[in-house]
View 1 (cartoon, rainbow, N blue to C red):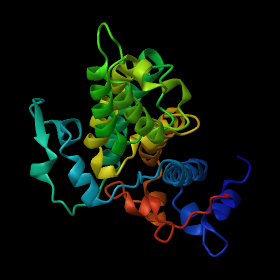
View 2 (cartoon, rainbow, N blue to C red):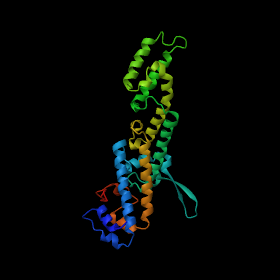
View 3 (cartoon, one colour):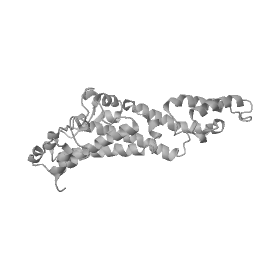
View 4 (cartoon, rainbow, N blue to C red):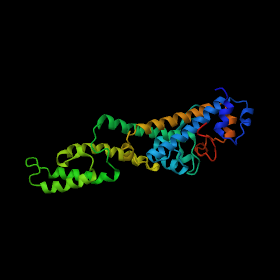
Length: 281
């Protein structure tokens, strides 16, 4: 980097004074790279919010509700005698305590794992799912009822000979729920396939309930034109950037303090009014 002071000035904005940063004697190149990582984390947050409808910049209240997930609630600490102790964050922190970068990373790690399992289930076990482009959580109960009812109407020997009018009524309702899922119709022929496919949607519904605090709509996420993959990539990227921010900070602690970043509170990290950084820097 030829002129890190110039780049830093561009990042901090025209009104900012970069001399205090230079006077610390800390490497400005590393400072610039760290601040760029912060900007990238903000870009990822905006993208996920716009494309998938939830916020990765967790509020204290949301994080406290996520402590119902054991993998987030329980952390291991090493005591002076090197004995490992498991600590519950529900016990050690208040619901209003700020969310740290480490807290956020634990959420990102577990969220990635949950979403990755769904992606694997879809790609390996249900690559040709016929309802996936139109399925919604509010459809689940009714679809299960329709499939169960039409399966009961199907006679082993007579088929729908005696129950055709009832089956037709069910198919009409099913078609109204999934008008564009052509391979799912007619239900009297496809109900064994749909019954099997419901296993996937029950798993998605269970995962959605697990992450209720984030107000995730996992059915909307799997309906995304590119599926879950871009969300997974962005969650992983944010996690990597956050750890890089922590790693880089060891050599530029004064510069970090000057800009106002606090590893114990992610709010300034994502709030440009508290830590102004130019995304074009």
